[in-house]
Length: 67
Image (tube, one colour):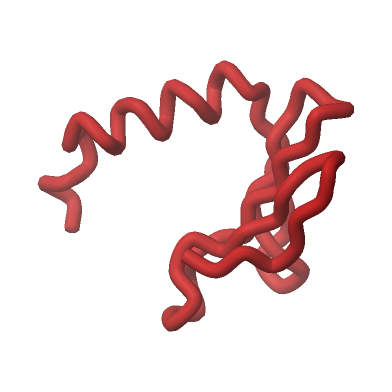
C-alpha cells in the first residue's frame, strides 16, 4: 500500500504500489463517501458503510477464492 497524500482532512492511498490494476482510495472527514478508482479507469463513489462492509468481508476471506 502506498500513501499518496495525507493531511488533517483525509487520506489518498493506492492499495498496491507495484501493480497497475489496484484502485486509488480517497477518504475524507468532510464527506460521507469514499472515492475509488483513477483517472484512466474512472471513479466510483461508495458510502463509508459500503466501503467498510467491503473491507470487512475482504478481511474475512470472502473474495479469496477468486484470486
